[in-house]
Amino acid sequence: MNDPVVTDPRLYRVVWENERVRVLEYRDAPGDMTHLHGHPDSVMVTLSSFQRVISAEGREVPVELEAGQVRWLDAQEHQGRNAGRTETHALFVELKEPRPGAGHPEAVLGPS
Picture: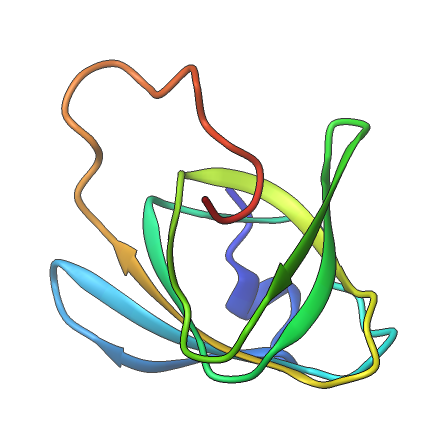
């Protein structure tokens, strides 16, 4: 999985990390796009309201969230594009320990 801090260092930065979790801050402007990257199972906290399009493997999912939302993000690889008129600001709390069992076949693209 491509690390978003490596693929898009202008947009993602590590704000805290230990042996079990890593916390990323994400910021972008309208029209900004990310490269293909991956996240392990994560919790996303929105610090601004935003509209995005998340895409992977030929699928596109529109995402519109208000500031202050907390959402689960299944482990996944995707690209994102700021499709709104406002900046995106969010935190991702990435879990370093894999989910028990073999994979997660019902994984949702984008936050759920």
